[in-house]
Amino acid sequence: MARALDILGDRWTLLVIRELLLGPKRFKDLLAMLTAMGTNRLSERLSMLVDNGIIRATELPAPTAAPAYELTELGEQLRKPLIALGMWGLSMPVDDRIDPSTARAELIALCLTGVCDPAASADLREVVEFQVGEEAFHIRFDNGEVLARSGPSVEPADVQAQCDMDTFMALALQEISASGAVREGRVTLLRGGQRAFARAFKALEYSTP
Amino acid sequence: MARALDILGDRWTLLVIRELLLGPKRFKDLLAMLTAMGTNRLSERLSMLVDNGIIRATELPAPTAAPAYELTELGEQLRKPLIALGMWGLSMPVDDRIDPSTARAELIALCLTGVCDPAASADLREVVEFQVGEEAFHIRFDNGEVLARSGPSVEPADVQAQCDMDTFMALALQEISASGAVREGRVTLLRGGQRAFARAFKALEYSTP
DNA sequence: CCGGATCCGTAACGATACTG
DNA sequence: CAGTATCGTTACGGATCCGG
Image (tube, rainbow over all chains, first blue to last red):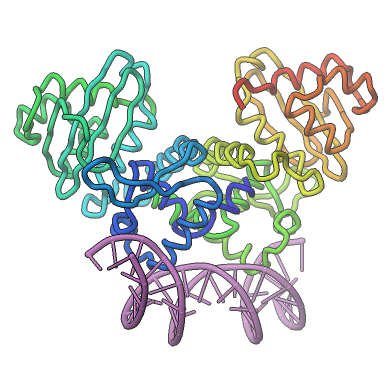
């Protein structure tokens, strides 16, 4: 534990890794998510993480071809522990619910992918793209694997959904049903049907929060 | 995750909680384990953790009756995430193996209790006391529950074992067998038999490191 | 513009001396 | 024993500047 904290214990380090759990990111994108972090600090953390084999420099796919950072296999292994920590933070009784104005739907989605039952999506293979407020992200179900990523999907999405933060949080907390939210117009489906959309949230359900 | 790190992200905080996962501890005991931590810093962290409902002030059992700190239910819920982080640190390829001179057997035991299969100790009910170098600790098996704690057990132990750090690490990593270690004299049993001792390590075995 | 590196004032830290 | 007070040093956030 001390060894892990020697590397991950500095301020921002775990938050940088959190961002990269949502897929490869550019320097400026990380900076945009981690407000109040200085450019020098970010650069310092990134090179330290590279030196320790937790992330590596890479390039964004095809048309963009911009430099970026991504997790290595070692870094990827932090997914479970970090999501577990996130769930603990979620259960903290500070304000009962996270402030919707500072919340980020893609991070909520990330948590869901970490706590949902893989068996529930064992025979599911679809990509759902979300637009929640300003943020765009997608969730890929691939026969038991569930992955949340920032930005639109590279392969064409089966479902494209649009809603506001409050609706997304209510969906994530299972306070409202997916099909009900569509019927009531709280969710707009730009592509795909209500059935496919509901299937996705069914697969994301967790048992014991 | 950010909420969790707001509370737990400062230096030493997670290490203080790690110590308390091994049972209630006094101020001076925490200080002794956390070398290089200033008394003011420890005091600061402790009161912050109390304010956030993660630990609480208490008293050591019966004869000692000294002030101490222990985890609340909220703090106890950090066990799984923290041990997961510890296991990640263990898999870090810095030096393959932790330096036996700085390692602490009770922390290794703590990790084992977090990753072993509860089913393996479902019908086991015994207390094993260890003396490894200077440190004394015990592991309590109670029908599926497995708990590692610093110091001797309050209830009389079924097994009392003595060995050096290298032997304990080899046992934990399943490099040698428990009964073999006893036969070869690497482990001295002050109380209890080889069978009971071997049962304990059998129950502590993990499947995928 | 993007990815950094440099500089500076402030906050946090480690060590030690001190107190109820 | 369980902290509090003080002090010199380190790490941080913010702003500015530079090379591609």
